[in-house]
Amino acid sequence: MSGKPNIRCAIYTRKSSDEGLDQEFNSLDAQHEACAAYISSQRHEGWRLVNDRYDDGGLSGGTLERAALQRLMTEIEAGRIRMVVVYKIDRLTRSLADFVRLVERLDAAGCSFVSVTQAFNTSSSMGRLTLNVLLSFAQFEREVTAERIRDKISASKKKGLWMGGTLPLGYDRHPDKDRRELVVNPTEAETVRALFQLYADAPNLKTLEIAAHQRGLRPRQGRLASGRAHTPPTFSRGQLHYMLTNPVYRGRIRHKEKVYPGKHPPIIDDVLWQDVQTALMTASGRPRSRSASSPGSGAATSDEDLVRADQSSTPLPANLLTGLLRDETGDRLTPTHTVRSGRRYRYYVSNRLISGGADPSGWRIPAAPLERRVVGSVADHLRRAADKYQLGVAVDAADLMPLAARANAFADKILSSPTLIADLIVDGKVTREGLSLTLDRTVLATQLAVAEIALDPDLHRVATSHIMRRRGSEIKIVTSSMVGDSDTGPDATLINALAEAHHWSVQLRSGTQLADLTRTTGLAQSHIRRRSRLAFLSPDIQAAILAGKQPCDLTLERLVRAGVALDWDEQRQNLGFSS
Image (tube, rainbow, N blue to C red; front, side, top):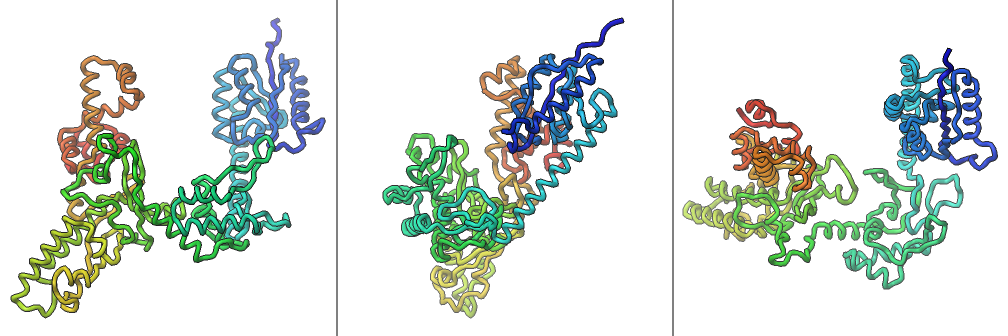
């Protein structure tokens, strides 16, 4: 009769906190002792305990990134461990998803595990079912606990309480540990006030950084990981910007996107705070100079070189609409820009996205299309009024045609000199349905050479309709004329991807291996494989993309994600082309 197989067993122990680990006999030792006793009771089955211990102290069960666990898994996958013994299943993991992954790895290595206080193991289907149920409850308990903590923090911050974190310069914790409030540190508060005043006087972060260094204004002393005290030599621009936008100095507490009145006293008064925020908003809209923009450098020399091809032959000045437009919530649309692959793209964004952080209702509209839309709307408004002779009241018949001619000339002047818009528009609002502008009646009267009182009462009001559609994180304005014919203008990204797909397709058909393309392009095989399929779009879809007549919401990301169907009619339907 053959003997029992030799089953090498390893004990895994874990404790979430460091508390008590320095004791002579701690929680990890208790778990190990119980598991070792269980293994001894199974000696008749061939179970043998290995010498190594696998203990993780002070580590959460919500992650698998634990040193002892990773060392244990290495031994298991090497075939040196056939049974893992734990005190309770949640010592191994509290996540159902992590548990499934662990079981798959254990099965692949021919290893099982046992919980000594819960009489089941993974060697049977019933044991697996029971484990899944228990882990589901363990994960549920963990998530409910996390939600309860988040709700408590949110409720506390609504009451203006300080819920911990890095102490802002200028404040100390309240001496009473039971009171979650901040108290002003008089010495540091003077530093904070000085920095705010310096920026208000000269709104430039680089200038502020230099001035702070010259005046000896320094951050709070901190401690390194070694415990040694350390004081940074000076403020960085990032630190300064964070400080200037931190509402705690106004006596408020921020929680995610919302700000609540705090229990602590403010350091900065409302007037200085508002002056600094206005200066920061203005600075964020200023165009940044680029050292690489000299002729022949290959860098962009103007915003017009970087926006998509448009129908206007007159370049538009950067940030033409600064301070003139608001979104549908009444929030100011502020000019900003981003740089991708060395190219600068301009946008108008809801100011709350700059001053308050992420907000899903905020707008991010490409600048050039919006500027063209506004300039064109004003010019069209004047031309329509001239065609219908709706420019003035109580005007002699003999003066109607000369007045219409002056209106048409002014419209042409606006198109050729768009900067006139800055003086002409008093206020504007962009909504999801259209654009409404209020023009300056005095400027209109001067340009049309007519008394202001003689102007048509509605001439200073401009209203146009459009549809707002999201394209990724951006907002796309589609005019009423675009809705029918899907004419959005050439998309350089789509056209380049189409040309690239044809190039790769030709090479693959000529016998070039996909691996060779990967080496020459530096791109992944999956990337080339997906993109090269664009060459098999129907001829009319490719022609529409080249002509800029694709649907306005057709982006390269959507095109790749949708895939290229073999049937051309199915392609048109999937991508939003009319049949």
